[in-house]
Image (cartoon, rainbow over all chains, first blue to last red; front, side, top):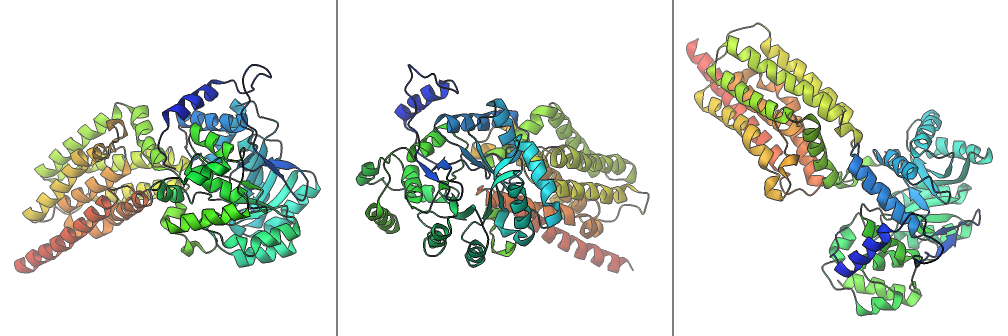
Length: 307
Length: 228
């Protein structure tokens, strides 16, 4: 993500970053809480904005970068974040999340979302256990079959884990708008708690069939690639944010893009990834202000398509 | 991964450019002052190679073998594999290349005739890998601490090896160069996926090496035919 720095905002963010992890109940103003939406199958409410880890948390053995990632996580939690998403496919990301959680004292309100990504169904439990150890959590809140890989083998195992109380929610993922037809069949036939798909101002195919089906079947929706890996923001950054964006409390294109996503009633949570503290705060604030209604959403699409 | 063919290279990139270049900085820092020593080793290697003769070339080529083993273990296996799951395979490929290079050291026939023009091309390529390639990041605003140094990082080591192969034994080029050439393509693809402006450098040099080696092989064959 590339955005122009704002010195005033930077000073404010610096002050926030200097605040202790758990803010005192008196004295300091608490950051605005993000809006939440309930997971249909369990009724548990989670914030509309989560934290992805694709690319950004894959920093290897770099201790300074690991600490920087922990700082991003600290500010994510500080601003009301809960859901962090990762995968065994994301290199060292799980280990880096584990490092951050350990450093932050393993916040109890974490909603841990990971994936199983292995072609051999028999190897799934071993991979899940390894992921759990890397995170350092007693159990995952959500496990998803990554990119539909060997889903016929993994899903029954995940449902068994859930029934045994070793997992709270089960889901399946795809990205880049791929295999929506197959995903639709799985959503229609399997008792899923979550699906994870790509949806943003540019990629809106999910609106046609997947979102209505998710609402009909009571499936929560996690949205990945909200900024198309920064490409969308790079394109939008060449233009001025419209003045009417203030009507929905947008101060940046990133908030514009995120508010569009999370204002869709089928969406439970969007998971932007970042390496920067100011960006994670900006992302979390997207869920704290006003959200666009249907008319405003149509206006946002029309405006972006004209650019 | 299903439908893997529908993914672009950029979709498969697992790390950011900052993380990628930071690997070289951490690698250089951890092993400092080894980068200076491997650079010196490269200069000595070039000196020994250009003197000719089996006795001087053997220690030079042994040093090259050491560099490939070192890059395989210290960079690919110990560092790069942490951010790229393919790092282990890269380590294996570099170890195999080290074994192949040992073949050049094994007692065998006298050094073959290599045309002067191609010896110069090989030397030029080696010098580029040794002295200029580490500085390529400076032009893009990266610090010298992130320099990719011969004997420490895979790119200059592969490029220098292509130069050495052209210089020493043109006819064995096709046996010994494929891993170096393949690495040039992999490195170029990685840089392209990261939108690095210098993504074309490694593949272009690999192509030049192929062109020179092809010409070199043809010329050597002509010389052999003339002497029959």
